[in-house]
Length: 178
Image (cartoon, rainbow, N blue to C red; front, side, top):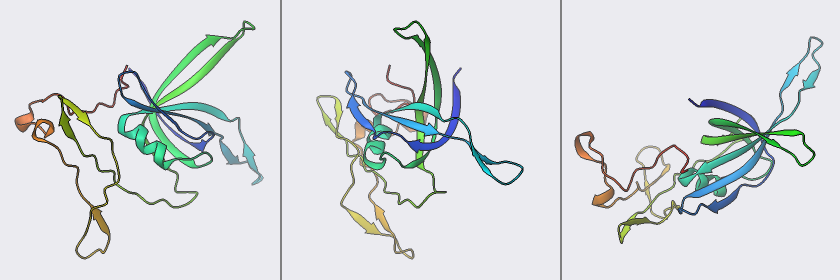
C-alpha cells in the first residue's frame, strides 16, 4: 500500500531531466513547503519548512522539464516514500521523496496557460519513437475563438484495443519504471 499525498509549496531547484538506462525519462526537483497561519491576535506565523525530493517519469517528466522553474508555486500529488540512512558521523538522516502523479501551478499566486502536448508515434523496429512535443498545427474551435491542437496520432499497432482487450507496446503506467 502506498500513501498518496498532496503538497503545496515552492520549487527550490530547477527540474533536472535525465533518462534511465531503460530509456524512460525522469525528472527530479526539490520542493519546499512551509505552513503559515494566523494566530489569535491576527499575526501571521510560519512553521517549520518541510523539504521533498519530487520525481516524475515519462510524459509527466518531460512536461515538468519544459513548464516548471525554480521559485514557482506548485501543487503536487503523488506517492510518498520515506527513506532513512546513516550519515558519516553516525547520525541518522531522513529523505522524503514523492513519486509525482500530477503537478500544477498553484493559482493562488498567479495565472497559468495550459498547452496540450501532442505525441506523434511511429513504428521503427517494433519500438515507439518520438516524445511529446507542441504541434504547430492548430484548428479554430467554433464559437469560442480558442485554438484547438490536433489530437495525438497513433499507428494501428498502438491504437486502443477493442472490447477491453489489451495490446502491448503503447500503454503507459502510473507506476515508476523500476
